[in-house]
Image 1 (cartoon, one colour):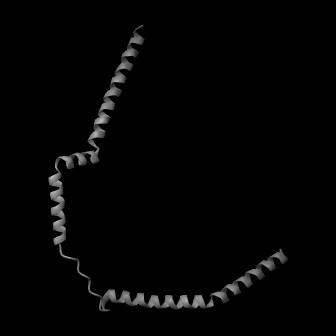
Image 2 (image 1 turned 90 degrees about the vertical axis):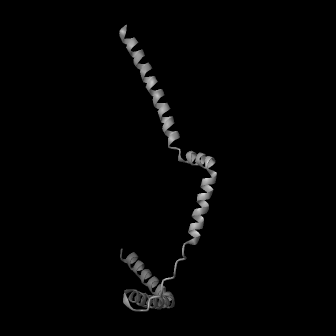
Image 3 (image 1 turned 180 degrees about the vertical axis):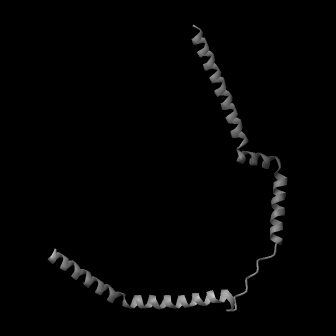
Amino acid sequence: MAEPKVKVELAAEIERARARMARSLGAVRRDLDVAAHLKQSFRHNKVAYIGGATFFGLLLSKLPARRAKPAPDGKGKAGKVIKDAEKAGVWLVLLQFLFKTFSPALTSLVSKQVTEYVRSRAKGG
């Protein structure tokens, strides 16, 4: 008879522990709700937030503008990179022109070769 009493007490203790855990978890969730904390803080300190934002905007507006970098004069590493890019661009344009010009002829040649290959495989296979 003692065993059922122990089981009941143990089940009750487990239930109390679960209830404490649920309350603790709820408290942790409330503490970690950053959006709610920020909203509440803004409601209580509107003047400070608006003043801070105004000051920050004013500070940003007073910063000097970025200056344009001077163009490389063709000397040094940057000039070499630019010259190499120019050469590559010229070759790319030339190859593009040649491909567009000879594309129909290449297509015809390749299609004839493929057709002959397929016919020879069909006859010989």
